[in-house]
Length: 317
Ligand SMILES: Cc1cc2nc3c(=O)[nH]c(=O)nc-3n(C[C@H](O)[C@H](O)[C@H](O)COP(=O)(O)OP(=O)(O)OC[C@H]3O[C@@H](n4cnc5c(N)ncnc54)[C@H](O)[C@@H]3O)c2cc1C
Image 1 (cartoon, protein in one colour):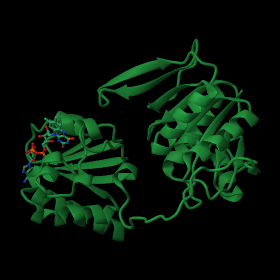
Image 2 (cartoon, rainbow, N blue to C red):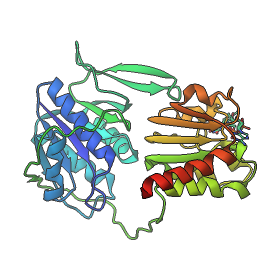
Image 3 (cartoon, rainbow, N blue to C red):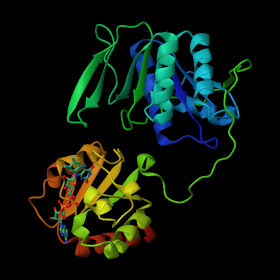
C-alpha cells in the first residue's frame, strides 16, 4: 500500500514545507509498510532529488495550468490511482487545503487538515491537530479506506534518509483546465508573513511609528519579515497585513522575536506554534515570557540595537 505525497515546485524549486511533507510521507509509509510515492510538477532532475528525503518513487508532470487547483487535483487523482495509494499527504497551505477538500469528495476519503505530528497506526489511523487557537489538541480517527492528511509546518523534522531517484513522467494527457492564467503581478521584496521562517514583531512598547527603524534594521540583518500586535496596526503605526494573532494572521515561523509586546492571549493565539520564541520586554512579569524559549528583560531601545550590532559582527567574522 503506497502513501502518495503531493509537493509543488515554485519556479522549479521546493520550499522547506515540501521537504517536510516528503519526510512525513516517508515516515507514514514506513509505519504502514508501504512505499512513499511523490507526485510533483518539478522537472525530472529537481524532482528526483526528493528521493533523498525518503521518496521511493517520484512522478513528475509539467504544465502551464498549475494555477488551476481543479486541474492539479485531477493530476494527483491520476497518480493516486496509478500507484494504488490509500493515503495522501499534502502541505497545509491554501493549495493543500483546497486540493484536500476536492480529493476527499472524489475519493470518498476522510480528511484531516493541519496535522501537528505523525499519525498513530495502533488499531487504525489517528491524527492530532491543534484546536481553539492551538490551546488544545484534538485526535481524529479515520473510518474511511482512503485517508488525506495535510500537515502543519514543523510537523516533522527534515531528515535526509535516502538518495536521489530517477523521476518518472506522469501522463496528464486528457486532463484540462477550466481557467486560463492571464497575468501574474508578484510583490517583490520581503517574504510574506505566512511563509516567513524568521519574523521580527513589535508592539505598543515601541511608543510610536517613528521608532520602527530599529525593528527594520534587525529584520534586515537576519533576513526576517516584520509583524506587529493588533493595537499597533489599529492605530496605523504599521499596515494591517502585519497584524498577527487571533484576529490577524496565524504564523508558525522557525523564529519569532517579540519586542515590546505584552503577550496577551489573543496575540499568542496566532504565534505560539512558532518553533523558537524570543521575547524582549522591560517588564519581567510580562505574560509573553511564559511562552518564550529565550527572554531578555530590558529596555528594547537599548537591547534591540545592541542585538543587531552583535549579529552584524557575528556575520562579518
Ligand atoms: C477580540 C479581541 C481580539 C484580539 N486580537 C488580537 C490579535 O489578533 N493580535 C494582537 O496582537 N492583539 C489582539 N487583541 C488585543 C490584545 O488583547 C492586546 O491588547 C494586544 O495584543 C496588546 O498589544 P501590545 O502587547 O503591543 O501592547 P501592550 O499590552 O500595551 O504591551 C506593551 C508591552 O511593551 C512593553 N514595553 C513598554 N515599553 C518597553 C520598552 N521600552 N522596552 C521593552 N518593553 C517595553 C510593556 O512592558 C508591555 O508588556 C485582541 C483583543 C480582543 C478583545
